Structures are given as structure tokens and as C-alpha cells.
Image: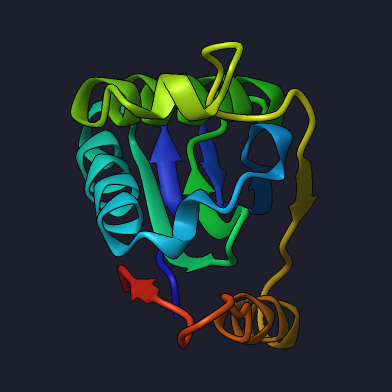
Length: 145
């Protein structure tokens, strides 16, 4: 079972399920190097932003992940942080992506976030993320637990 987080006068356990879509629904995550770079970037963000990526699953044009975070970040702040840091890393590592994504933005404006409860709810979401598929090959799944 996950441990409770403690901060000053608070004790909490916050988990979210996020879905980010690539701009123009481009099939960027068919390239395993892009998946690995995204995952590596998320791992680097964990310590800096005090967050934990529990599970990441890729479909060809979007990514699902379960994220555990501190209470100081709202879901919209987490959207902004993860989208901006991962997009900057992708453009820096693969400059040719800007040509494929005409406007120079990696992620579409929207996305999905849902809270994840304890026990069975978390297991159902993890299973859903694991079952995300990609065209042409099996899902690339990264677990950080």
C-alpha cells in the first residue's frame, strides 16, 4: 500500500489519471525513441517537482499516465508542468518534430484528468492504462512502482 505524504500540517495521498494528446493527433508514439524520451523526462521530473509517475501507457497519438502528487499542485498546474517540460525535451532532443507539428506545439490544448481513489479504483485505472494499444506493435508500458 502507498504511504501517506506529509507536509507541514497536512497528510494526504493524491493520485490522478492524465491523458495528453499529441497536436493534430499525429502518430508520434509509434517511434519507440519518443516513448523512451518522454518516460525518461518524467522520471527526471519526479524529484524536482515532488511527483511520482506510477504507470505510463502509450497509444499511437496520446499518452496515459497515473501520477501521484503533492497537495501544493492543482491538477491544472500538473497539466502545465508535465506538458511544458516534456514538450521542451522532445523538441530539444528531436528538432525535426517541429516540422511535423506545423505550429511548433507538441501537445494539443486539451487533455483529461481524473482523480484516482484507493484500492480497486486504482487497480482498474492501472489496468486500463496497461491495455492501451498502439498500431503496429504492442503497448510500451513503464511502471515506476
